[in-house]
Length: 380
Image 1 (cartoon, one colour):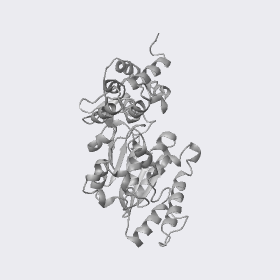
Image 2: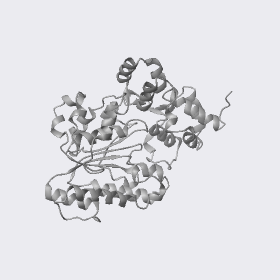
Image 3: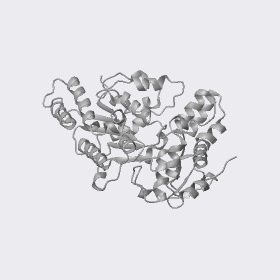
Image 4: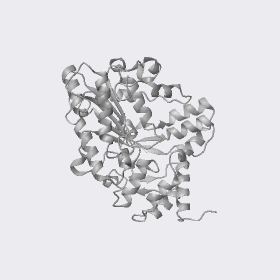
């Protein structure tokens, strides 16, 4: 059992031991269905606080042969699925949290090589019987050698895949180098059994460098068939409120409102916090502040400030999200900024009407703080 190669199940165990746990294990049925198929490349993007890491921890605990997770899945929905025992702790897994390697811009010049060295070092310890690579080998070379000699491939679980586009917003060459690294690691690689990649932003569009185009993308704007795994559904929240004696109507007003395809989704972290502390309030500021929102409103493309005030009055804005470049710096129109705010969780998108709006009272408070500090409205 390693940190990156065939990791254990401690993080998922922590989730299962928590007082608030909502069973999202049927996500595994979706990943099992695409295992070793042309659809095996999955990129899931959703806002902070929406359970990305928990899902990655669950998949790691399920697939990794570095642990025994049968007890952790006992009683969960996935246990009844036919595919469940076939893959339980049966695979070589490489789990990478990219943010661990890019905590600041100081690490930008070395983070790709640090990822490769860290994983290759563990591969050497995990598979000492396989030659053909050494500590300075490229990661792809090491994986190819293991596959050639053993016939076994790897499942990759990559969390915070897009953090470089958020931490180093203006480092375009480094972003391109990173996309090239990801493309080289996965495209046409026989050792790849499944890739589950998660972050806030969809895959960056860079002309030919959008070429991790092997991935099927599931985003907050286009969730495809994974919508119910992007947050808590109404039945899940209603049942949790009944168990904990919390007013469901209050929970709905504060944390519901996110449109994910045809579903209404609740902010899972805020719901869990409200249930834990038995207090309905804004928990958004635990990881985000209104200043981050104000930066984008201040860009004021095409009357963005006026659109914000309209949405604060329960209005909606029609947008075209297709021009968004999937980063945090390239904005050509108001639609690009509003689309980013959807991916960040400040707005929600109704695909049927192509409209964005403020989803709930929790986020409305963040907008009110942003426009107050920006001087767009006067508040008593």
